[in-house]
Image (cartoon, rainbow, N blue to C red; front, side):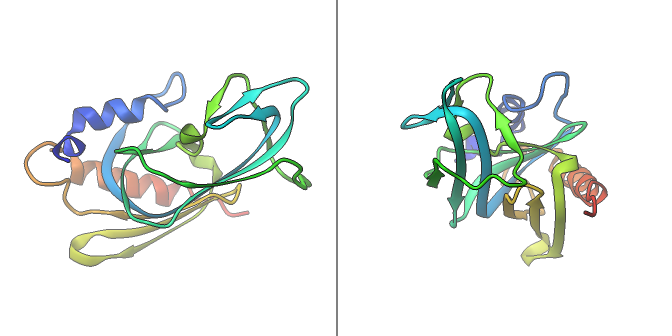
Length: 187
């Protein structure tokens, strides 16, 4: 568990999901209380653990949910929000192989995509709303909803764990809060 509260480990975990040309500006350890990731993928087939591009494949609607608390790293880049679990977790997956896609943003895959990797990186411009409230012991309760229907209920702790593994936690938390509050676009 102590490896979770290590800034170097956090940066490495976040950087794996950062878009090309961007870097992690700030990252913290946080707690996800509830997660719903949704997406619609075109011209693909699904296997036991991933979506694979296929010219003859269909359109697949995907939901990935978790209603229990778990540790995450939350980071921001120049234009992205990155959410990465600290340890492997199980999710509830739902698929619709024949979805009604009216008005849906259909993503075309260029390479295989593991289910675990879906919902790890979002454009800050895709944030529909972000509500923040004071929580227990200086924490911030944060509810982020995305334009595609995904959402995250998070707790941003005041401290970055015991010890000195995350010396920039307070500074990075304030940067993340300011960026989230500044990136909200009204529809």
